[in-house]
Image 1 (cartoon, rainbow, N blue to C red):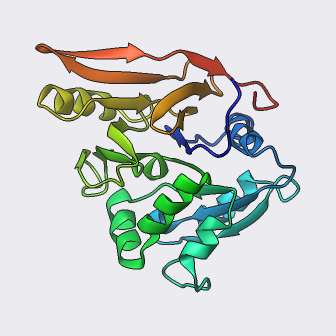
Image 2 (image 1 turned 90 degrees about the vertical axis):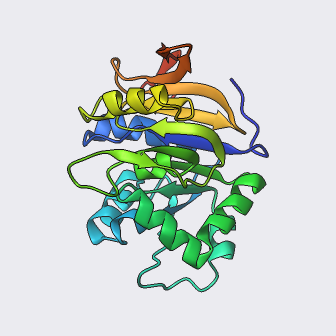
Image 3 (image 1 turned 60 degrees about the vertical axis):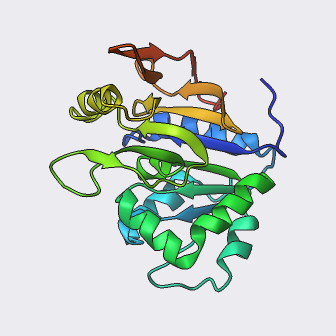
Length: 241
């Protein structure tokens, strides 16, 4: 399906497992949306406290010949105008880590406002784990406890409802999400590792996956039951399509 770049795009990865082939298929898909040979890609590593390993991993995932890469550090800032930087990118990628700490830091620096303006202007947003959860109203996170998943209620809300990343990657995710939904948590989208949902505006454009057994699901409460509905998946090939 053809996409229109003036529309708003968010690609939410469930999680990127350490497999170069599978990861690169998802990255290639995002790059292809810009229809540019070497788009500008800005990375925001706030969720790890701007850790060096997360920044190095970003530069490794986006080869220099495929993208003009840069990153926005907030704990040791070198970029003066955050809004101008974010608006100048073709793609913004948000890294994984502690979602709650990331959101709090963003709100101090005004990053959330700049992201909203850029999203409405057509800058493509993407990310996995914390970088996918942040776009929704709420979801499941380990931000508050290393050994226990808990609900997070103060996402950016660009996308309505809830989100559960790492759906097949962490044993606690599915039972907690079902339990929260059964207790009145907003319905939403669960995504396996190596899969992603591409939203255009706030609607699902398509689900993509780089692994045959990875997908995404809409989880809601109907009556007294929690219903998990698999979404149609497009399996990516090595050219990201």
